[in-house]
Length: 506
Image (tube, rainbow, N blue to C red; front, side, top):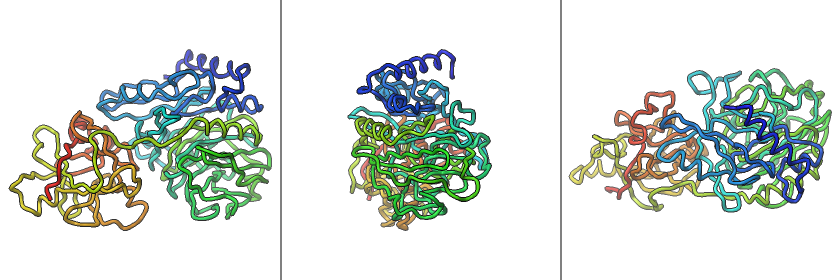
């Protein structure tokens, strides 16, 4: 998977360029190199982070046959070849299995192993991210980010060149500023090599979310903070820093950097403007944080002890050797803005209209007279015909609304129980009344795609994009192709997860 030739190739392209290439065409890691703080890890599924980089950005694995392919930029220093991924993943599901390190050091991110907290896989590993959960465009060119649902995580516990002990380092990440929660912990950065909590000061990572157990900023969040282990810090202490603002950007640049008894948080709109400094000062006075005891592993989407309850979306990020200057980071921010991050459609396939009444007919052979319906709170499939009772027709009819958790997708309201929507809960589909909570609204948001078996539409969860509407033993589930449950079985998955959308019966 990580051949020596691959590593030599990326090292030559990346590190060879930064010493000689023109600054005007520089990527983020070329800028850091010129500033005397070179990247020792560079991760992105959206673009190359060195001007001359042409190697693999990430690897995807498809559900139909478990085959893998590497996705590279369209050109040197360019945007990822999303078309290659789309072709490879056509008619099936795909997961991101590896996020390659562009620095040439081999600090690739792979499926996180169990640690202080077990991941949801049968062997305790974390889940892998959907390859299609976070579509985006960069100056009009399509790419995909890494959509982290709770239980998803990537890690490298044997990284090379990362800061250890009290050594200086910097890092930035470009994230989705609208995708977060209060779980612990959506991080990118330096963590323990054992996947366990080994004490204060053994981490230094970017955190993004609205967890308020430790530090907080102004307002209700989300905030950029630093996970230093056993505390999320917005400033000097694990209390409130009014200078750390709540983030409202669609795309956010988050920066954390540290050196002996000094560290900083900076942030910005990743689509426009310049970086602001939210904290710049001494280390927390609590024992363990000065000096630091960083261990040098790299994590994405999880806490240092493999805490897996957070969510967020990652597009790109790097870690450096040495403490970058503000001027260097300002130039990196200008490069990020110039990359032109913008939203992309979350749906595909047959056009669906909000406000319309629809039905969803199964396409699996032998079940094509069955429609997605409900009996009480249970979502199931039932045989429905023109001669069926009015009550059954209503139970099999759904009104489309803009997604309660993301208006770019849809929520499905029951025709006969107004105010109640299809949601997933413990991977079962059920009908529940909208309680107004953020969790409910995200669980009740779904993004139709072109049918996996070539018919109609397949409907994936917005907040768990590896999970799709599937009928199994005539019951509805949010199922994951080849996952750990019986209803995740790969056999007939594409057929069971594809639905013909028609007019509602009611």
